[in-house]
Image 1 (cartoon, rainbow, N blue to C red):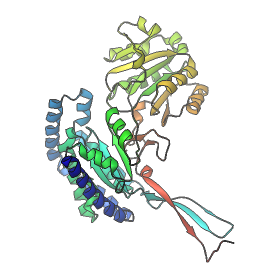
Image 2: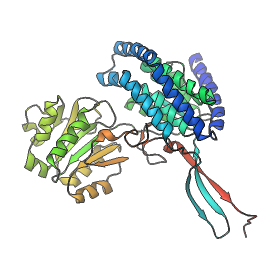
Image 3: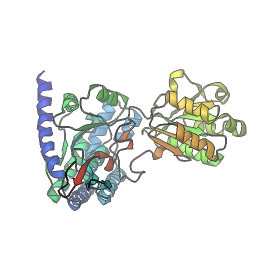
Image 4: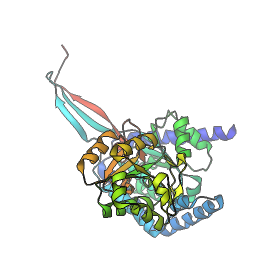
Length: 421
């Protein structure tokens, strides 16, 4: 009971400071926020040896904890990874400031002029697991959009996140912005997560970044609104009209480039027409790369294919494992995705525009792609610099959540002594 009380007190303290900082950030000039992000990037690069040393402690902790190879891959930071963090910070810094942007405006016959303008959400809580770069991405996007943020990194990324957070604070200090604009929960205590989920007085929205267990917990227990996706069960449908070489290139990239990200292909759907023309070439490509392919029916004739259980369809493997199925045209693919998908990202490989139009029209995943790898389901690849997460719900933000998606809006109404009759 005492630990829970201490966690609540901690989050109340951080929340009150964040709420105060958010009031100042809401009208902070764009150049000041840009200066903070550029200074943070400079500090991250200057301290890269310290960050890598801190990450080594986290890797040792993760190995002792028995993290999967995919989770260890997410956790690891090297100099190239730190260069990526710096690039992300600078890209976000260079973007247009969304705060105060006029979304639309119009005049009324009454003489009123009405503008709908972007405004910050307020205080954002971000709860994430092993990826320490989320500390920089989330901190930068929240700052850019005029929001204060409370970051709660995973226990396995504790040291890396602290080292990166210290650099963000140096950026805030250099620009004269409140240090409480970006705060990191300074404990591994799980009670702090529960306290954040209940902190409706201080936190306006929660963004979870992690696996199904974390996201499910947040969605079940949060009293604060949540931007989230539960799983990334991404499909690629290869139509009968697909160009063979495009299909081979895209399918391999979508599965094998990085298996541990939410945009990795988890299920390959092959049209019967494609199968009749080209046979099992896509399956053999995956097997040759070391992917365990789980299939049914005609797919089992290919040596190395493992018989799929029914629950292999609709599973997020995050590993060198892929479900596969032969379907009856685009409608067969659509029916399968509607049954097993998670509304994250789906792709169609096709040269005929008719099935592409049908695929785009009849599926409602947050991201739909044509002749492109699902690994592009990433805020950086969408030109957002980075993302705080990918939302698959229907409210407010969908797909990659960048700085613009971390704003709401308000109406500015101007008259000239105007009264209502």
